[in-house]
Amino acid sequence: MTKLNERIKKAPEDTIHKSWVHRISPDFAWGYLQLMRADRPIGTWLLLWPGLWSIVLASHFHGNQMIIPDINLLLLFSLGAIVMRGAGCVVNDLWDRDADGKVKRTKKRPIPSGRVSVFGAIIFLIFLSLIGLYILLQLNNFAQIVGAASLILIIIYPLMKRITYWPQLMLGFTFNWGALLGWAAITGTIELPAALLYIGGIFWTLGYDTIYAHQDREEDKIIGIKSTALRLGSNTHRWLIIFYGCSLLFYLAAGWYSKMGFWFYPGMLFAGVHFIYQYSSLDINNRETCLKIFKSNHHFGIIVFISLIMGHNF
Image 1 (cartoon, rainbow, N blue to C red):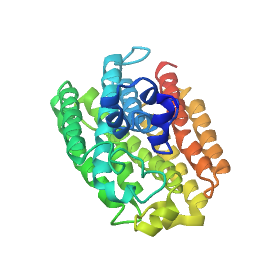
Image 2 (spheres, rainbow, N blue to C red):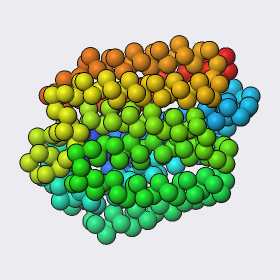
Image 3 (cartoon, one colour):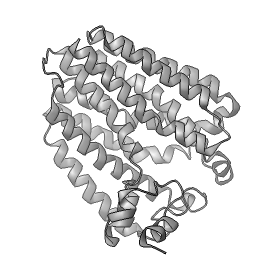
């Protein structure tokens, strides 16, 4: 058996088998890279897109004439998304280490499987947080305050699944914070379009993470973990209309208030078509389908970003 096959056998079942993490990472780093979900970048993309969107919106609103505005800031946010998504996953896995060991999809994660110790995870969390702090210090003072405030959400989000059937709402507050931070990084303030983008992102997250949660709803029910998948159940499709419909409306309003050009709107039509695809393809009783549709939200993020660039230039 090759080293790759040995690693895949030990890895969680929802890992990407051909990921570079399994193929080329050194042994000492393998468990930690899995802990920060480097083998599953979809979460990083979902965290990153609201920040990139906001940077383009704010740049356009304040008259930046570059074809792709503030490339350096876009790159800085990209690195920050990798680091802070990783830190958030470490926090989540520390809180959930006992529950993860009881769920088929997560029982082989680094902490419940014993490949990474609790102490090692804490040290790794400190390391990631220091990198995140360095990145944050490259921004203006107001953006630093906005960014630091997100730490509260990162810490308390994993607790919500034990308290409420709406932890996806808290995830929405957390994962879309970049919509506020991106605007703050450009302008040193937060204005109405940023708030509209943020609210739209919360509804987006409610949609895609409800789909994601349907993968584990039976195990969650047994071990006492709450989610919108359990709360909404067979009514999920109806709620997706609300979640995704509201998301699209708030995104359109953010573009309109930011004075986006004409071609922003045809681009967003394709974003709406993607929501229709998710709705029509979803089978909440099929785990593979739920995961595929969840991951497709990266494509939604690309569509919105391209729409913003088009609206910025035309």
